[in-house]
Image (tube, rainbow, N blue to C red; front, top):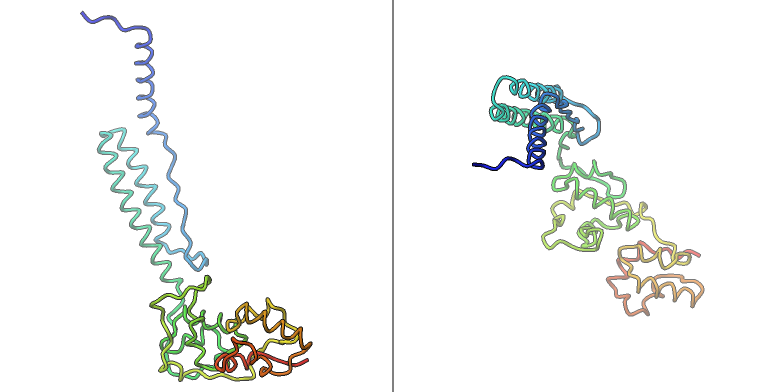
Length: 255
């Protein structure tokens, strides 16, 4: 004969029964599912009708699954609820992609034209075949670092394609010579550095001047009180003819 249940066993069985009853009873009182609308990428908050239809579909499927609990098996209700949630989720993401495609700016037309490098913005640059949005932003950023382009061949400088950490991707895109013919440069648009007043920090911000070069130029200026022309820098070991030619448009020796 089985031994009678102890007092602790009876209490444990009662608590387990209460938990089971409470769990199935709570299914009747679940709060409605709320879905937060996802804004389009341009933050204009233009939602399509499908966004709101998907919200209603989620709520309707949820309440339908709860009503099935009262008259059908729990397993069947869970299956129906899961399938309805999947359909609502698919409808939701389709509406998000639709809203994103509507808010995306139109594709910029490409055509053959002549663009002045020192005055063009990113939109003007993208009209040239072979120049995308990323390359256009790099061109404008490099122009600000240089103080203006002095030659269209500067678009092929490795510094233009480096990231913020000074790294150059081995498979980076370089603007070919066939694209350079669509650009022109006005020499008056270049903003040179006042060598006789610039600090070491100001000099080394230029892409063509390293810290060692900036320090040497600053020391030489302190020694002679004032530099009169770029030829006075030829005594420095780093001042080769190619470096002199590159730096000439960007150094101003005015007193």
